[in-house]
Length: 136
Image 1 (tube, rainbow, N blue to C red):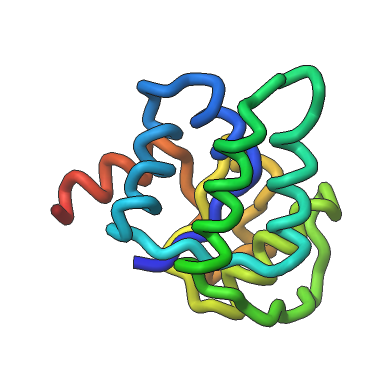
Image 2 (cartoon, rainbow, N blue to C red):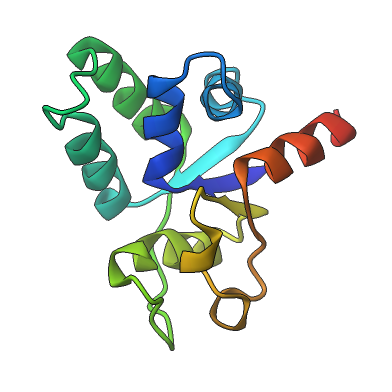
């Protein structure tokens, strides 16, 4: 299963180690799901995770970024015909389309309107975990 995860999923996973967001990160490390990305997404992940207000462990950040690089799917993005309401979300949808991802997982579904995102299935963390549990 190929997924693209919005940055807010990683942040939530770091903030709440026993949450569904953390479970998604664990599934990536267990290679039960494949994460698609491009350089813009990696740079955003790293930039946001390193923000002073979070004070996340720098070694943990490096481990997850390095793991994504080595085990994920580095995708060449396809430019969207229409941009999303928040243009900084465009890389996530572009990579989802280019990698033929099964899901784009986000904590902000309203930022990814169906009329722009189809055929990509944009789902919440909880929706993904329900789907994953039912298919396991």
